[in-house]
Length: 434
Ligand code: HEM
Image (cartoon, rainbow, N blue to C red; front, side):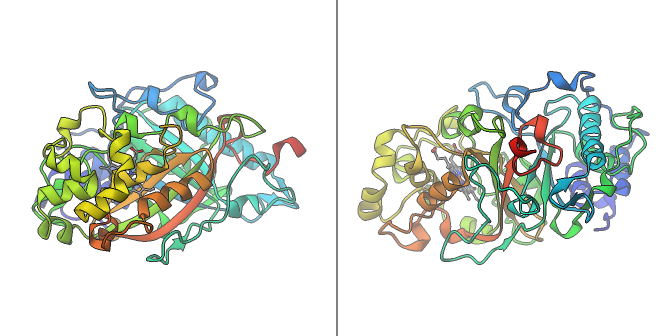
């Protein structure tokens, strides 16, 4: 992707395009794009004792900012870097030790360079079933990591059949670009400092440019994209997500503890699902009014009782999904001819607890509006169960009123294991056997 003439764009839009493009040219453009002579990234630096960081790669919440109601604020800029393993890295079911060291060294360089926070950088490295198939042993039974498959009758997605994915996230667009380039030895400094140890993963992984995914989340960022095909002017000014509402309220998210594997060699890890989709925003905004959108996103009662406000601001720390609202999903279908997306997805809660920790972000990777739905959970089967509840094929309601189903079009799915930090660099399928 080439960068457009920046004089015709706002800084926010320009840096978004730089993240989407990636690469060292995008990094330079991004650093220079605010008009000064800045030539290097300058954010809080990381730790000289990477061992002091949490064992869980997905332990982001304590490091991220929260709003006044305790809702975690996701970093603004995200990149999913898809990776294919070089041929000789796993041979005869064994991982080349120097490849493992190279990988761990590069990851530690990131942790030294950037504070583990949304001002700095948070990241995970996850591995697909295809990666683990390279080994003679199987994953321990405690790890539920099937091949991805289509989960609804309406989709025929492509699958993430490569080896691994980095999820890099930061409030600073230049950090996600620089971190990605740094991992592959393409920049001399990380956060203005020479990393000293070599950070070049190109002997270990190839980056799959056509599978690279990018995006953004935060108040006002979606409305910056009204010049993109399929993004109508009616996207609310303050909305953090394209469909116009806040998301990720604390009570509707699984805790990091809930999603973490508690025993076995991968204890401290979690599974991750990535579902990429296009969104028909034109129809969502132009054919529907706010009342209908609230009914379809939350519930009919959220709309009649005006619980949501313009973009979810009156919900404060909770999506107000009390048990009765969740339990009335089927009855709402019959009496009101509409069910809410959040209401029906919440039917999959267990003992009142949500199963998914959602870390999704908006995208325009496909040239129009979309979402990369990244979620962490204990087992992939839990994702499948929640997705079934969200699809709501059991509900007696027209497709167009069945939550947001009518407006989203799934294009890809991928399943991953996000190992604990000590095993994040090229883990064997069964660490106990080696
Ligand atoms: C364009 C796509 C999507 C949008 C705009 C969206 C938006 C939302 C919103 C606004 C909420 C309620 C507020 C909150 O998060 O607390 C919510 C809840 C939720 N969504 Fe989505 N979502 C999307 C796709 C998905 C997908 C693909 C899944 C997969 C299963 C999903 C699962 C959930 C779950 C589990 C909840 C919380 C239910 C609970 O409270 O227990 N969403 N979503």
